[in-house]
Length: 319
Ligand code: ZN
Image (tube, rainbow, N blue to C red; front, side, top):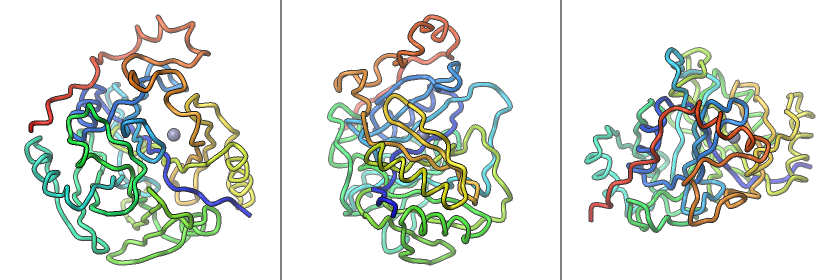
């Protein structure tokens, strides 16, 4: 018997220029810069986390900005096509105006009776804002450029692109406890049996061929595990399903296991704790380069190798 998954924990993607990346997610989308660290597996690369006012699980989109040339990714099967944030239905007009005034091209559509605004970030990563009254995991960021009532309210869903529904569907339903809820226009919608924020995964089929990881593509999608014990049960469940989950890896702010599902998408199971206040006060999240203890001795050399970055540019709320 596997535990119920409470939904999405974070989404991690590959950006290009770190300054453009932070300016967009903080300055345009109004997320808080909750952690500035390095990729623990490649310390010459930043790792940025953007989320709600407290960096709550279920709100964080994170990036490795790859500044080397010639590392563009290509979207295709086995990748996340879009990451969707929830907004209140009353905020749709605000976001139409804001995206327009920030020069972000978007398209609007109705999907499963909800209004969806679709657009891309500066590197071409697909994003959506979905108007919903569903419950939220998010705490407002009081000092942000977007008024609290209009701020993004945590993840709504991810849309995964696969060659064919079957293999990924089996993992979602038989292992992760998701249930097929709806299907329309070539899209299948699954909801975590637990419900709650960020509990939707959509699948779409693509004939684009296998995607290539690089700038402008999503690296992995993380689901939340409430505890290390629960995470270990997930690890066993993946192994029982014939997949090859990693060992538990200490990511400082959470413990992680990784597994590639048969459709090619890399999944992570991340614990909800200890969280981003592990090494910084809530008031000071993201203000300095945070390094885990095992890298602190190398701080000077690490800082010297990192690309130029001045912190996110945050304009006024304009009202
Ligand atoms: Zn991750």
